[in-house]
Image 1: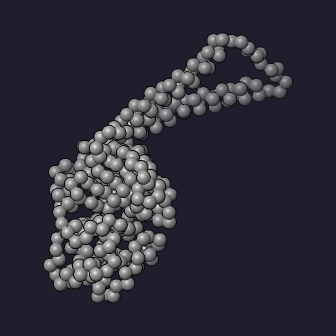
Image 2 (image 1 turned 60 degrees about the vertical axis):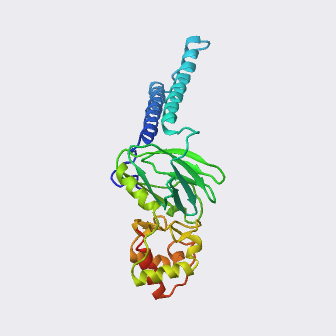
Image 3 (image 1 turned 30 degrees about the vertical axis):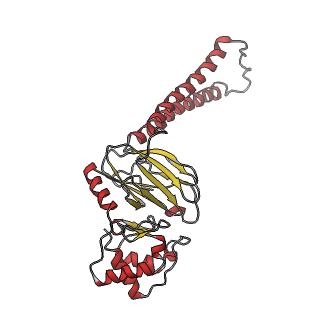
Length: 310
């Protein structure tokens, strides 16, 4: 799995929260490495020093208070230091529990919904402004999922009936990739996350556009496509601002702007969109989108309409 479109190093960090977690990991790794080397060194010394046969058993030391105090205090000191490092990382990585969320992310089988206070709603592609720490409330509509974008922070479970808050922040503009990290059913592997970090001005422009009604169709095929969308089951599941308020399936208001379909399973292009609408189960078996059984002409019209949603 890629961690960032611009930086795929294993421990690359692009937020203060992710940096704190990686620093804790590296510090713990160094401490454990030193302990490992000491233990291995002592074992190697004993194996080498007492390798000859017939060597008498070394003198036994009993009741040495200084030695007993030392081998008690040193491990305690190491554990206390790890506790201090962990507490520091938690202070950076965990948001306050009483702050109003800046963004709500809802996990579904098998896609992500992002709801903004402005009323903008999107799916699978989560836009955030750079340099601003957002408190994100993570929810689940069905089973336990796990929201994780490694380059931006810690992973967190999305649990039905329970809200959990995390920080989401990006230092630099770019695309940061993540996934569901908790097995959640047949299409768990295709529940990808795309976090798009933009300069604050660019984010504001995007949010205003995302919160506005979808543009009306202007061509005959797109107009017919909208009529088909209204007539079929599509309108009962998908929201399009100004057309439908359904919330069962991903919001389609800005569908044509997204890079992928099916939470990352295929690229978003007119040809792939048509293939998806023709038989979604063939592409993402087990997904909750049924085959609408559209004729070729109706399918072409619906694609023409959906391509206007940008």
